Amino acid sequence: MELILKQDVENLGFKDDLVTVKNGYGRNYLIPQGYAILATSSAKKVLAETLKQRAFKEAKLVADANALAETIKGYELKITSKVGSGDKLFGSVNNGDLAEALAKVGTAIDKKFIKVAGGNVKKLGKYNASVRLHREVVADIAFEVIPEKNK
Image (cartoon, rainbow, N blue to C red; front, side):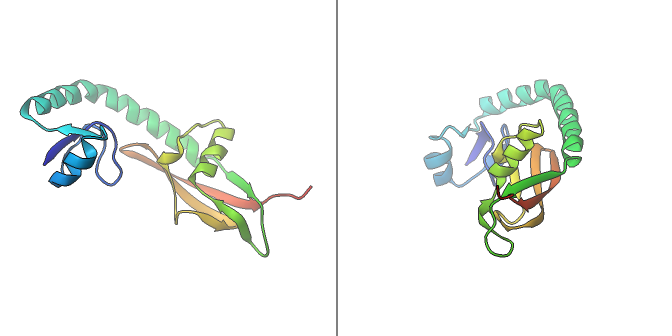
């Protein structure tokens, strides 16, 4: 079944992509949830026209995303967390905590676009994460988990 995605679907594609999926997945999940529409000939023509109009706007978006990626790479993020015995954390540090740390330094990025290498961080130390700023631009960011100071 050929579908046109109306929004980004993880592990499938981005908005306005033409994808082929199994009939049940398309009929029972993607279309009812509003994630996709059937790729009829008229829908394909509308998509082609939309992509043509958006092509020049896309170049500016990519340039802005690249500029933001360079800014993000320059950050030295330190995330504080409560620490138990040794270097183990109480709880964990995840993409939400990283999004908050980025917001504190002046760059608001939605947590769903941030992927921490290995999922959740459960020990002190230096780690890496990737931030997807555009479908073509992914920035790697380094951060450090440090112990919270006792009062």
